[in-house]
Every structure is written in C-alpha cells, then in structure tokens.
Image (cartoon, rainbow, N blue to C red; front, side):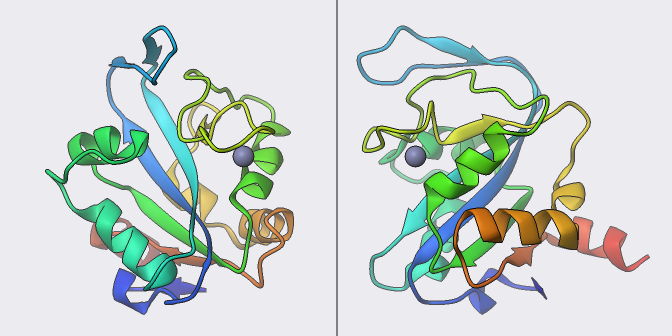
Length: 169
Ligand SMILES: [Zn+2]
C-alpha cells in the first residue's frame, strides 16, 4: 500500500524504514567508537516509534532539516533528506535488519549506528546492494518479505513526489 503524504502514515506504534541516498563518502562517528566512513550508495535505516503520534510523528520529525541532533540518523537526514519511508505497523525494527542482513550485497559500514540499545544487530543503518533504489525497495514482493520479517501487519510506503511521478508514468 502507498500513501501520498506522510500525514497518512499510521499514528500507532511500530517499526519503520527510511531510505537515504548518500552521494559521497561521509565521515561519521558514533559514541565510543573510532570514526568511520559511509561509502556512497543507498541506505536503509530501521527505527521504531512507540511514543505519542507513533510512526507518523516520528517520520514527520525525520523529514525536517536543520533539527537538533538527537539520534545518529539526524546527522544524515539533516544533510541528505529521505528518498522514501516505509511504515510497518506493530513491527520490530530488528526484524527488518535481520532480513536485510541476509541479502547478498548488504553491509554495515558503521557498527553501532542507531543501535545503541540493541544487542543483536551490527547496526540499524544498512548499506543496500549497489544499484538498488527507493522504488525498487517499494516492490510488493520485497515489502511483503520485510513486513513478515518485522512481524508487522503490513507495509505502507511513502515516496516523495519525484518518485511518485515516476511510479505513475
Ligand atoms: Zn537491532
């Protein structure tokens, strides 16, 4: 299922994925670890939202630029924005990471990124296989696999207008 506006995302708790395209090598440091570099490419950040406003409020925040840095991911979304967002109502973020970890060509260039509270994932920022784009990830078969891995009721995709136009053409 697709929505045209992040305001149509569910207001309940669950997991979400943000697609971020990083156009150039980006140095990033995570607390208590040596700085590392994110090679250019497409990334998925897996998060969960359990507070007021649920997934909708969280994704709305991620979309803002120039926000105060509270999470590791804020440093990337402030600069590069978001290529797509997927909501997994009732789902678990670590399930998404586990599913992506099994794909050929995924990598975790910055250990611990976004996963300070997690003991099972290498990071919650996953570099996707070369050439994969936001609209590729929005294919129903891929979404169904990810929703199942996250133990979610389904997947709801938002693509910004430029992608949405490409989809309708
Ligand atoms: Zn995890």
